[in-house]
Image 1 (cartoon, helix red, strand yellow):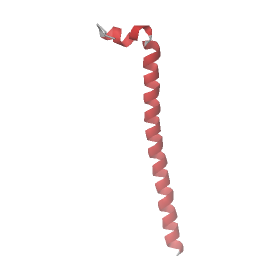
Image 2 (spheres, one colour; image 1 turned 90 degrees about the vertical axis):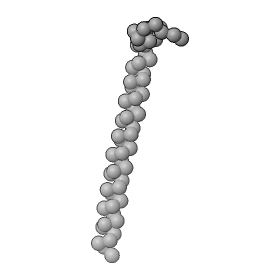
Image 3 (cartoon, rainbow, N blue to C red; image 1 turned 90 degrees about the horizontal axis):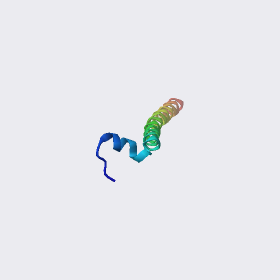
Image 4 (cartoon, rainbow, N blue to C red; image 1 turned 45 degrees about the horizontal axis):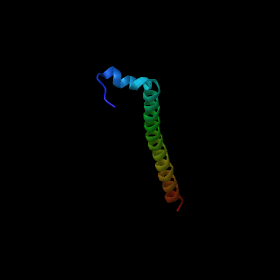
Length: 59
């Protein structure tokens, strides 16, 4: 498919209303997943380091 202008590209032959929001939602979910994984990883590291520190004090 070939577009003659940016407006034609964004309209996607009338389907742009469905295409662009789906790309946006997908990108948002991907960013949310990365941020969520980083937060969970940091939390797990904190819990692990706390348990190691507590085990070192106990022995």
